[in-house]
Image (cartoon, rainbow, N blue to C red; front, side):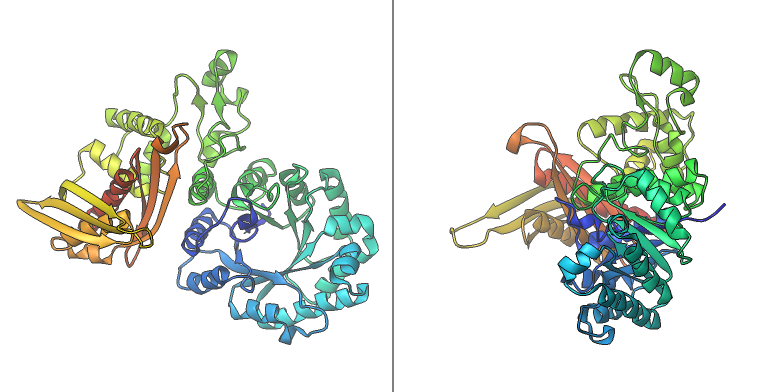
Amino acid sequence: MSLVKLYDTTLRDGTQAEDISFLVEDKIRIAHKLDELGVHYIEGGWPGSNPKDVAFFKDIKKEKLHQAKIAAFGSTRRAKTTPANDHNIKTLIAAEPDVITIFGKTWDFHVREALRISLEENLELINDSLVFLKQNVAEVFYDAEHFFDGYKANPEYAIKTLKAAEDAGVDCIILCDTNGGSMPYEVADIIAKVRKQIKTPLGIHTHNDGECAVANSIVAVDQGIVQVQGTINGFGERCGNANLCSIIPAIKLKLKKDCISDEQLRHLREVSNYIFELANLSPDKHLAYVGKSAFAHKGGVHVSAIQRHPETYEHIRPELVGNSTRVLVSDLSGKSNILAKAEEFQINLDSKDPVTQEILEEIKEMENRGFQFEGAEASFELMMKKALGTHKKFFQVMGFRVIDEKRTDDQKPTSEATVMIKVGGKIEHTAAEGHGPVNALDNALRKALEKFYPKLKEVKLHDYKVRVLPAGQGTASSIRVLIELGDKTSRWGTVGVSDNIIDASYQALIDGIDFKLHHEESV
């Protein structure tokens, strides 16, 4: 089975989408998820464009990835300078990524109107930029920007730009449908012609302005393309990029080509929802393969048919991508997800055990209240232990109070939290200040508990996200809080839901501390 390599650009191209912005910490977490999924290349950003991307390339070096390579993105050198003196090229090399990807102009219209240089000069800057990079980096890719539009306008010149890259010894040439308007039949025809003239391995990078990004990527793979670029959930500028959550199962299950393992494919929906959560967006339930409604059936003939033979109305088995069949009105699915999570957490759970059904019902009830466990695995594990009676209560919060005070209009508010905690037979009554009410509550809880559990000093709050849940109640709406904590060796996420933001934050904070104490005891 031939291997198609996956190149994810969620952290760069995906962040150009309206309403999407990731912190450096978010990008690190996403990189780990993509690595676990089996993505071969993770494009972290453009180091020369902003401080956040510079910080990412610095911080990612401290992380241990299983197999993914980190790619830095940039452009060819500017006209009238050399690669060695070009700031963009030097910044790319200084970031010390595993791979460097640069783009260049292949459409003669862009060369004349955007760069305002001669067509020959453009070929020179493509070639010598790539030659210089190959001398400094082990693996170099070339994104042929606007290639399909360029080929349609001037096929001879478009091929010359590819040959300039090929002559530089580049490792892969990626054909880009940058404006996203090409049709699948055009993409197939052009790639077939390119392959007769270019021997360097080819990749594909498509945008979705004509709603054909996924189709164009699949057609490209069918034509012999060996690298596919895209983003999780199709995040990207304008109408988005090619959606890897649709492309990956299509490559593996429809085209029968290798890209990730069967086990990794079963985590596809989990990764999709995880990244939606970190983007602070509600998952699109109608996405193919990974959406909540992708395998949902409602009433009548469909329901009776899929209960006998699922393939009557399902094009693949949903479990292959981590999804499940849903029968609306009476939901019959879910146990497989619970059992898979139990196995992941090393919790002994049997499908015939009544507790399994209890956990399933509790999850449904909690999700109705707004809980989401993607990105909050620690809260999910604690909930399962409570249902099984294996949860140990390390402490009891007898009460807390948070005071936010603003004495004058020109002063910042001050926040103070007071907590009363019982550990064994001892009661600890403690107060602490903080940068806002949640930070004050976090500080007070730690201050009280660290006397009994010194290991909690290792725990740091890495991320805090708030989402107002849609209920049409304005300021009285329910709130979901997702937090991420970590110690010297790992990170974990927790969740809380309430119509009170302090209470929701409290739930997530308590789960985070509780999770740390349980895992310390099991070490």
